[in-house]
Image (cartoon, rainbow, N blue to C red):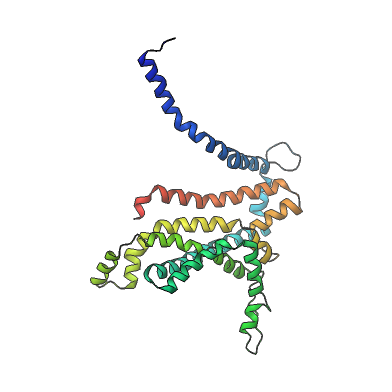
Amino acid sequence: MVLSKQTKRAVIGRRQKLTPYLLVLPAFLVVLGLIVYPVLTAVNLSLHSGSATRLTGANYRYFLTDPVQLKNIGYTLFVAVMTVVLALLIDLLLALYIRFNQNRLSRLVMALTILPQFIPGLVAVYSMMLVVRNGGTLSRLAQAGHTFNPNLMYSAKGLIMVNLWFNIPFALLLLASLTSIQEASIESARDVGANRWQLLQKIILPATYKQFFIAGAFIFMGNVGSFTTPFLMGGNTPQMLGVVLYKEFNQYLDYNRAAALSVILFALCSLSAIVYVIVNMRREKWR
């Protein structure tokens, strides 16, 4: 059967239209299998209780009304938000120093900011525990004739401090935006009498708005559901939600409540994801 030229063109046109979708199909199936399906399964499981077949919101009511669980949620949000604020401040200071000081020390600082990426999290937490616990390295160094207990174990202060150590590498994300600032712009501002605060407010911060929001979103998502540090250094009450989820699943064997808490954690992380998407879609608005 001989096809006409018009028919051949139509077939080729359809193939060209389908080719991009066929190329994307494997990645789409991976997303469905590894992200969408588990999320839908968790949502379905969270809406059941025990052997009951009808849908119920009892598992969500438990976490959103029980005083102990509300305290756990508030504690988790406090640790995560404080980590975001302090980590962004420290990362900004590190990025500013590396960007505007071209010397051996700044290169050393830049190398050290990458260090947390190469140390396993479990090793890092145990090492930090040896330093900050009462009677640990910090206590022995600071005693000087009197008892010194930092009381950083099993407290929000200790969790936040260790979280800051893990989030130091985000300084490189802010540094990437700072490198886009031309030296001519800095020199021109100085020539017209701008001081350091004005340089920061008028030139540096506007150039780093996007990276600030992106880094903050990743830091929040990484800490709101963290498990290793809260499990090893956290107290018995209140507890981070990652530890609560572990106990619901492994100790109490209440898979429905564990699924509900998973959905709550997913919803909290989605807030950061929304910020990330909005910032990327409105790229030019922040410049």
